[in-house]
Image (tube, rainbow, N blue to C red; front, top):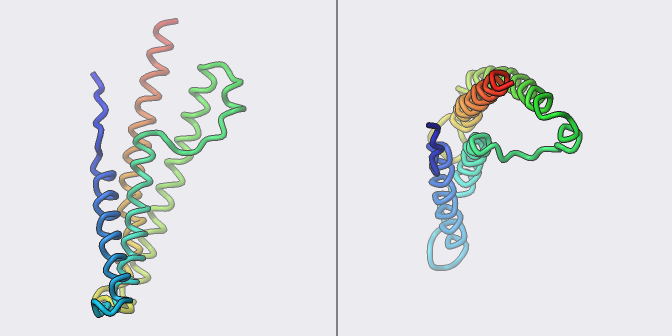
Length: 159
């Protein structure tokens, strides 16, 4: 029995990053008033949180299979042909994500010695967001491909 969980690790991480982003932006707004002296790092942290949040939202969208699709041409095809088409698209997407993971890794290495402007860390930490999130995306694509293959097998056995 395949039970889909309501919440996922990547969705939870994206949500926590969003809450942290809201808090940092509120601190940034308060820093523009006479009430609080605004720390200089809030703008950079907000940007970093936004990037990490966005990259962790992608695998959550993949988990829910909720990405935007232009399916009007595919929907004209027979159900089995449509299933094969979506499987091929996901396999191509998986290959592209493997390549993007490699690019993310090379970017981390290239930026390892770059210092952040206001934070005591390397810029590589920012670029690591794409690399780390890509593994979640790859896992979700592989999961969907597995389900598609199982579904095609079941349809083949029923005929």
